[in-house]
Length: 477
Image (tube, rainbow, N blue to C red):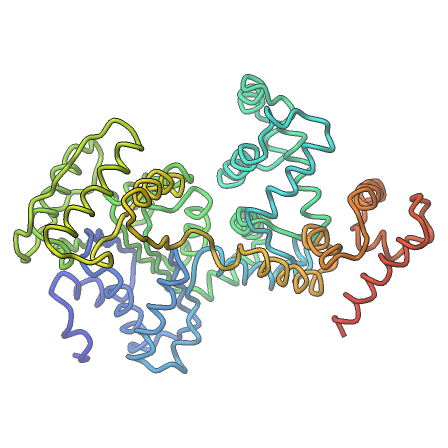
């Protein structure tokens, strides 16, 4: 037996050694699920499975990088680099780029992030003359996102009376029009948003049987991490791809499902055994990470769940300190309690600031904590407050790069056409946007043909616009 298999306990080793057929691994918290996934892939490769035929889907790029690094240490980096491993969105974006022409998109389509999508919706709501306090662009974005993750296209929306009635009841009767305009505008810009990466993959696999067969034959072994957090769209893609060979391994824990608000469907993991024949189930129940008190407290909470996959998580670790729970009146009181607790521990036990960490559920909760810490003169550092890629200067540079690759990308163009300042103002941009919508062309194309269109833009500004498009085209060479 290979040396790396000796590092596994009996419960971990069993799913690693099953080569073929559908299987589900119920992995309690801290039970070594990443190690099981990693070693299972290494084992498949040691048994002659070509890495090109293995698809491993994770929920974060960090998890994918960590797993690929571990696999490289076992089988070698030259073999590991051929694995199809990454997040749902990154893997399906790769497939869509190869097959984009079938859906009418360029292979260099832009992927809009949340800010880009919300910017498009904000512009649409304004152009339609709608009340921005009723049609709040962030709420509209979330609504459209939920449609797409449930595979509700614009056509399906207008055929669904219940959805239209629900939007009318919430004083948003024109939601369908906004949805249609948003989809049309993204298509015209050669852009997909994050939700499209799943929606369009489903469309691709459903409309083109030859494409489905191609990827079924390529992905003969499929592994899915955090299966409890998959949504309906992700579930259908995995079902379609695994249908031919049914060599699918899903790993997850129904007790750790926390993304229902984002569309995750707990039934995907609960009903896995109904979806495939002769499913093997494995349970990882030993927790290596936590103390006995923490494990027992978690078990007592999960025990109240009405629907669950049975397992008994245990640990050989020490009892550890008891868990302390404090109920407080509001967020301000909570902040003061946390700050006072830190202050007292520093004074009484000579502890350092670096000995403390505050975890909170949403970014909005940080303010009360920060206020209280400042009043106690306790310095702090916030981690993960603003993504590197969301910083203005980074977004600006990326927008130039996006525009060079895809000149139809209107969100990128609007962001940088007057940065640094070129004397191209909002009035000019409004005229260009109206013309682009009227002629069903991109703003970039309108500028390229500006002499042929009477936009009532003075010659000086026209020259500035042409200089901008010429500059972008010079970068493409």
